[in-house]
Image (cartoon, rainbow, N blue to C red; front, side, top):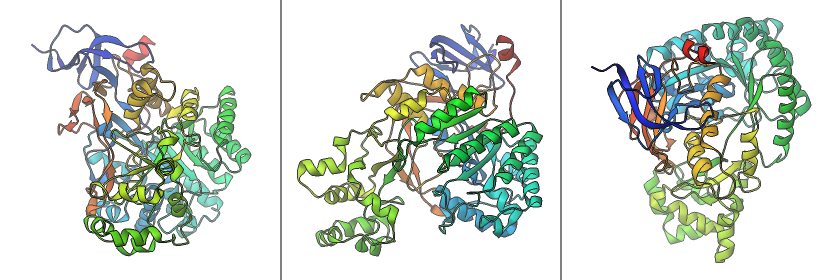
Length: 579
């Protein structure tokens, strides 16, 4: 007679603690891991994991499924890549709290900041809520494949309290500041995992306006910190340019001191300030030495733009001939572009002025690469379009044109926007190894027409632990721990991220030798038929949430055990006793 719901037999367990892998069985019952070791009893279901890895499910702390979670049961692409818990509401954008008069305003903010099509949001969002608590209730009613946790977005709070004045970044009155504090406090008490804000000029609405929260006064930020203190829970998530670095970092430290809560901020190497990340790491280390719970979220590959005819950006976007056909269906555009006369005309044209970012990309062929299959996210400088053109004596525009119009116009070029100033990932390696950083910044659900970094958890295993040839590799136990136990504990979810008795049974069974990323491609499955970049992987034998197999060999099983995570979760008794 079966004793357990599920037994995973004979796998190599990389348990999330950072310890050495070990061969063991894993028994699961009622959604919880009950035994790790030699399990003699049978399971009602069993998975033969001989020769396979068994790890905790990935805990991704930086996603933007705030809209998708309301209309979709599957949090793809994240769940495809072994994530079993995702945190959304990052970067100060989201859809609650909200008044009926501000629905469109929040859509334009999300569309601009996170490149999620407005048409999809208008059709997909049903706005069954006003308060943040109402929003959580609406999400909780819909089953999902994986667990989701929410943060209170500063932009929505500010607009809710101040209306158009908040959107226009005007100063809040004392009464408005107090109301924001109360909203954040009450949302945290209702189960929000934290609060997020943005202070970067890169975040703008679809109309080009700056995000409502940039430049928010210190008193406003400190009042919100008081709200977290009153709630006695929650984390702070921070995005900033850190241009006034002394004041900005001091504000971060004061927020942590006042709230008594952990804070994490996004850290990348930007070409325009290539050494700022070192300064920030130095300040971070000093703050940590003082006992302040501050971390930086980092990414183990470039923040890369996918340039293609199906996407939001490519090098010909501001040429007059292309602009004349830009709204035609892809097949028709490609047919026109394959005409020799059209090609000659387009390649002879100057870029239209007034598009500084797009035009800067169009000439940066030294940093533009054919992504390839499997995708290469650490390409050598000699493989750039510019280097290829110089070797072959060709105009780089011609090479780009040929790549983009091949394969029915479905190809993508890779442009590493951040973390690739020196054309390798050595700086990213320094960030990863710093004890005060966290794995993050996948942006799952966002930038759907130009970035597809949601596959980073898989890439950390394939590239850093197995395939890297341009430098050192990372130990598998370190990488697994970094995207399971470390990220779970950073947001107060102490019930997951370890393969140990008493822990939530969120697991991946992985064929490490066969694990590989497939190239990104465009799908049109958002509401209204809107597009989004999709990327799959091979080698995930099974992904398990609360003891139920949600994916088998990359295919969904139909199981939807995912729940809304309300608030922090204590360590289970079995784990707490062991520690």
